[in-house]
Image (cartoon, rainbow, N blue to C red; front, side):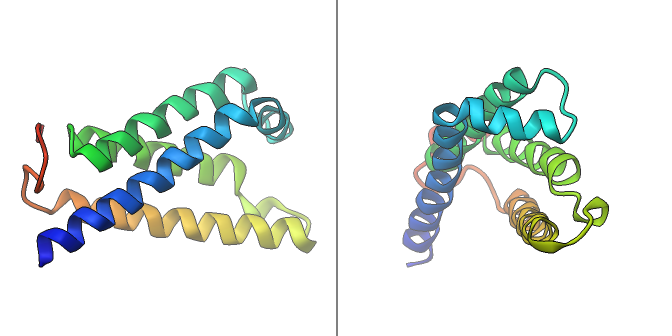
Length: 131
């Protein structure tokens, strides 16, 4: 039973990252404008690159292919995105500060979940490659 729950959870978790990647690609210009406003260098390239990272991380979770690499990619994405784009402590207040705080805290919770996945024995159930 635990393997079924893990596999279903892995698929749901991976789809979350794939959806985020899809959003980066389909809203590239809009997200790049936001990234530019937050001071990101080469914002369009940064958004496209982070979309690739999200795509690789999502597939890594679903397929169990090199999960440690996928986890590290996703953790790096979340840490950079959180401190660069959701730095609520620099906001003047209002709804933007609240939205940034919510996204920062969500991202930190996702970092925690990803780090816990590192503790699981590998290979994962129904995985082709573990390392």
